[in-house]
Image (tube, rainbow, N blue to C red; front, top):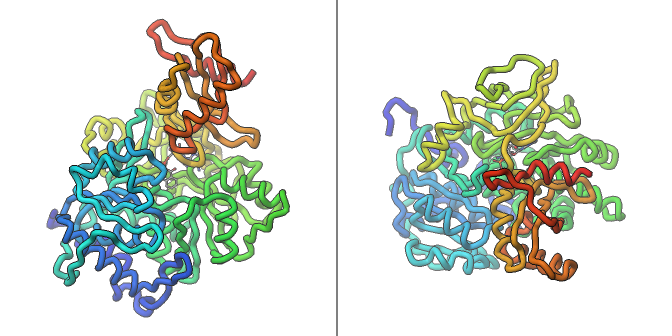
Amino acid sequence: MNTTDALFNIYDYFLAGERWPGRSRGCAIEFRDRAISYDELRDYADLWAGRMVSAGVNEGDRVALLLFDSPEFIAAFLAVASIGAVSVPINTFLQAEEIAFIVRDAGARVIVGESDLEQRLAACREERRLLFVDSNTRQAIGASETTGAERRRRATTETSPAFLLYTSGSTGAPKGVLHLHRSIPATVESYAKTVLGLTAADRVYSASRLYFAYGLGNSLSFPLAAGATVVLDDQRPTPDRVTKLLEQHKPTVFFGVPSLYSALLELKSRGVTVDTSSLRLCISAGEALPDRVFDEWKREFGLSILDGIGSTEMLHIFVSNHPGDERPGSSGKTVEGYEARLLDDAGNELAGEQTGNLWVKGESATAGYWNRPDLTEAAVRGGWVKTGDVYRRDSQDRFYHLGRSDDCFKVNGLWVSPVEVESALLAHADVLEAAVIPGVDARGLATAHAFTVIREGCERNELARELLEHARGRLAHYKVPSRIDFIKEMPRTSTGKVQRFKLKAEKRE
Ligand code: 3UK
């Protein structure tokens, strides 16, 4: 512990009674048909802290969480923080191999998993201690309980490690983004207070999950810091499901990604009632919100969607549209508490109305990539973090997203690495070569578009169907290409690299 730092722990920040007198009996979480008060949530986090200690978790240890959005996720996350350990939330859509990679890379000592996902943790069984949550009853399985939570608390400071979020950036292999305890209050004081203006009267619902930095802010940091109520759901956020949650729980603030807003508009156009009557704010992030979606949402529901750009490295949104000052097609202006600048490829700052690589600075910035000083050195410099995005700034200091500076792209707000999708396609015996580029489906939304060279003499229609089946069995659903084209020859450089830009050009014709 660095003695110059003030003592600080996010468990106290959210749950210490003295910070929020009178709020303890207010509702913190609505889940299924239960309402959980702030008092109950604190007791539940203490119970989980006892389970962690019994499972052998010590200060600084990593604890992997493979959990659906639920009170157990929040209780376990805050329990881990309270004993000075480090949570590693894992995307519940990932396949066994990717999960095993993250668990090993993080060196997690204990894993808390959903019983429904038990098979995907089979490979991790031998070296790690596993605790399960029964996906139906939400009871813990195999955990021993001890009491005396206060005695287990550890003195942490603002700069103690709190959690690791894995993201697959440009290299394809997921990398752990380390956040300190101070990251969370920094996102609350900046974005949640100055853009959203959240209060204890708000009811928050995010279709994006807690294991994603966007969902972690939306469903944990922001509502709990404001003394508000968060609506959690452990089911997959299909448009039908989201519609049901809106109707049943009547949230005031809703967080989604562009493809979800578009899907909800489509439901409405088919005559389904989408009840937005309780909403005061709609937020979109993860990828650029098309103006068409902004305009249609405004026309159909009379509400603006606030588009803002965030990242795992900055934990949440740092450039955003502000209520009453929305500009469709723009990511908005720098959020209070952050600085943003554009650099040319040589690293020189570009002033005024120009286009360049976006770098950003703020208190919620990552402390670096886990065990990857090389990556940290390349992307975190003197407090400034490289976003990997190319942006244009206009005369009013509004930012416009032009794309990624590397080849990765997003579908449903989640990263897709071309290399990973290509490898899955290449695992099929009839596929000789494969290349994947960002595509758009009939509605203009982001998808993966694959090009393959196939073995001669294959029946094309049959193979196209078979390949899709094959990809579905190997990839998280959002990574499955929406379109697979067969080409005669793969465009390559003399050194054998696929020329994706040629495929992109071909696609436009
Ligand atoms: C892209 C956007 C255009 C952009 C995130 C809100 O998405 C989040 O984090 P990730 O680490 O991805 C970061 C990258 O995603 N992006 C995000 N939002 C927008 N591009 N317009 C947007 N509005 O390439 C960025 O570098 O997965 C989003 C809050 C927290 C987050 N972590």
